[in-house]
Image (cartoon, rainbow, N blue to C red; front, side, top):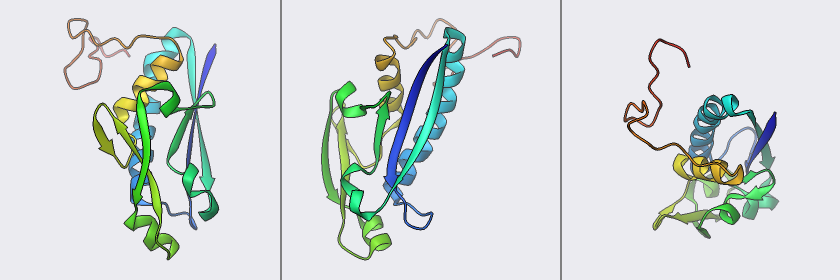
Length: 148
């Protein structure tokens, strides 16, 4: 079985993270489940690794790696930074964190769509977006007969 290792690096202060990292983590958790459902039948196991960073590693925070490759090296994503009120509150000092520009929009968290696209691209797969092939229209496959 092939393996896709997705590593998420984020700030951790006594078990807490900033709002934007939290949102990325929520997006990532949902996508890892979705990717495993879609890719396991194709012989691909998705493994998730969480790497907690301290305040000296802020520039690496809220970064996702796919088999060791940063998402911005896989997709057309521009990385920048802006003031992060949440990190500033956690750390007690003005803090600037990663933002990304994806498909013309700036995000403070990494959207699920980017995570999914990067996973498929790094594995050399095309995502099945054909609505006539049993897609319920809500982004999840529709299965008849109760089997997934």
